[in-house]
Amino acid sequence: MKFSLLYPENTEKDFKTLNNEAINDLSLEFILDALTEVRAERPHLMGMLTRVPMNPEIIRYRHDVFEDFLRFPHLRERMSELVMKLNDLRDLERFQMDSDASALWSLINRLREIDDYMTCINMIREALSALDIRSEGLCSLREIVTNIARESGFDALKADIDELMAQAQQLKSVTIGVNLDRFLRPEFAAIVSLNDTKFSDSGLMSRFKSFTDSRDDLHHGANLGEGRRFHPANPYHPHRGDGKANVMIRAAEAQANIETSNITGKDPLSDAMRKQVTDIMRKTVSNIKATIKKYVNVNGYSLTSLLPEIIFYHRWAELTEKLTALGLPMCKPRILPPEERACTFKDVYNLKLAINKLGGEEINIITNDFDFSDERRIYILTGPNRGGKTIFTQAIGLAMLMAQWGVYIPASDASISPCDNIYTHFPADENDTVDLGRLGEESQRLSGIFEVATRYSLLLLNESLATTSVAEGVFIAKDVVKAMRYLGTRAIFNTHMHDLATSVREINRAVEGDSLAESLITGVHDGERSFKVSIAPPQGVSYAADIAKKYGVTFDQIKESIDSKHPA
Image (cartoon, rainbow, N blue to C red; front, top):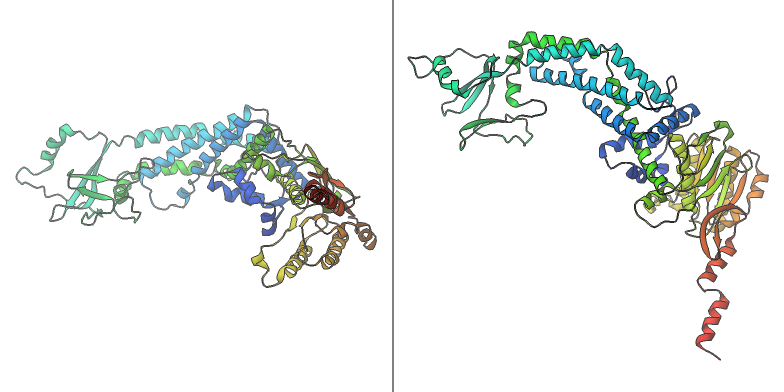
């Protein structure tokens, strides 16, 4: 049985993988840090964050599952706890591959694990049955665990386990024979007998006397057969991790000490005497193994594959709750056909800023309305330094990704046509441009994007081609925008090249295509950056005038200051 909470039944796991540039430019490591502090969860979560499904059926399936996780905090806590327990118990297949009789202690632990497994299945079933879950994914899971409990013969299995445990628990003590070397150090040990009564100190001397020959000081016993040597001349500390024997004589205490694991019952002496145990109790061991094999093929251990998926929904639900508690909007987007290449956001904002606000930073988060449509699919975004161009560009990329991951997005309302992938072109590290130079490196990366991008992709360019002269940059940038229009992709190109933004009509006329270019600006009002975006021609000179006036560096302001200090 293969079941997934990320992919509905009978659908292919169809997705594209983000490249390293997009992972870095969209700050997915930062997002991952906000989702979890558990190191073991990170590889699974990052794997899911870098995969971009496009199929609307898959995305809607995920949104519905996520919504159930979000609605029922108790459910996600219980599911994570129980499936993690199942994950710890999924070693049963070893008995199908083990041709040798396993040690009794190991088999007893397996019996305990099966008992725990049955408990987990029943608890998952009860948790799902008690709630008004609506998603196809969780309803299917409820049916699966119900069938497991019904078809796997849980009642019979429970009875078998109880009976076998009772048989095994008849073993109360072990009599061990130990050989000594000429310095009276223990060098060899083996089992003499397995007993159904516990060892008692009061009978030690009487049993010892009956065991020894009355005419001799020492008993001339029989060969014990196979055993294991223990030589204390160079005792190994149990925590050294060298795999050596952990049996040694403590001179001060004059007693033997055997290091044992309380969890599994495993210890070096038990390992040494495994053959003796299984030889003496071969029938019981065989019965236990037969019982396990009878049920091992009919179980829910494949449900352990759900653990990373449950963690994914759990962590996103936690983060979503925290963001809404701050008063920030989060919504379930409507999924449109990919062919429309449309997208509408209301009150969208950058998830990174919201996470920083969660961390205690004093941030006034500005939301924006934005859309891709037949009238405009390529935006040339201009504005002042630190005016929010990069933040906005990144916000759209993250919102699109989150929508396609199947979780709520940072907006009050949204409709999206899924993209097949997101390609980013942000400034490169200086060390990466030594061989080609900045312009050569940027041009090469742009060329690489157009080799793989399609009309269904989303392209995010951040200050691209800004390292050359303005004339050269505008010349190349115009060709890049023309290529976007010809391809039919969706794109945001944020830049300081205002001449590029003023050329959108020229570009639209020059190339046939169904992705029109438009000028988008970030706003400045009364010298203050508002971080609001709007469709308008570039405001290059007026931006500078507003900033100059705010900080008192217009000619009239400076002249007035000079005159006030040096009156005529």
